[in-house]
Amino acid sequence: MGNPLLQYLTVFILSVFVGIEVIARVPSILHTPLMSGSNAIHGVIIVGAILVLGGATTTTEQILGFVAVFLATLNVVGGFTVTDRMLEMFKPKPEERKKADEAVS
Image 1 (cartoon, rainbow, N blue to C red):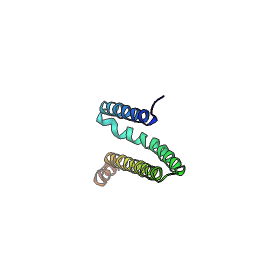
Image 2: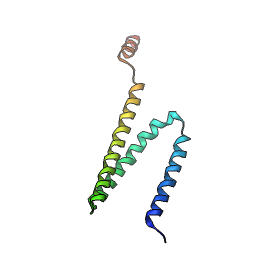
Image 3: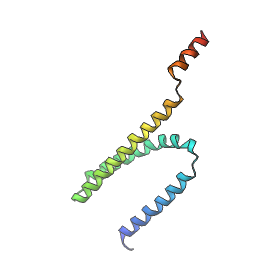
């Protein structure tokens, strides 16, 4: 069959190229909605990383599992932070809301 490490490395490198091509072709106006949707996927990745970390037997596996959980958590938190900031941009400012309320009255 061949070296499994070489197979995994090949899949990883190909997925990096595919990911770059897919993201490069997305219009900038869609990045935030797509990021919001991908946060759910990254929640599943955190669960998977925790499961892998739970089954780790060597120190190297434990370190890599911890790094995977940490980076996935950072990605989820960062994604929600960016989404929250983007949604705040669409809310009316207090002055604008006051003017709108006065215009209705």
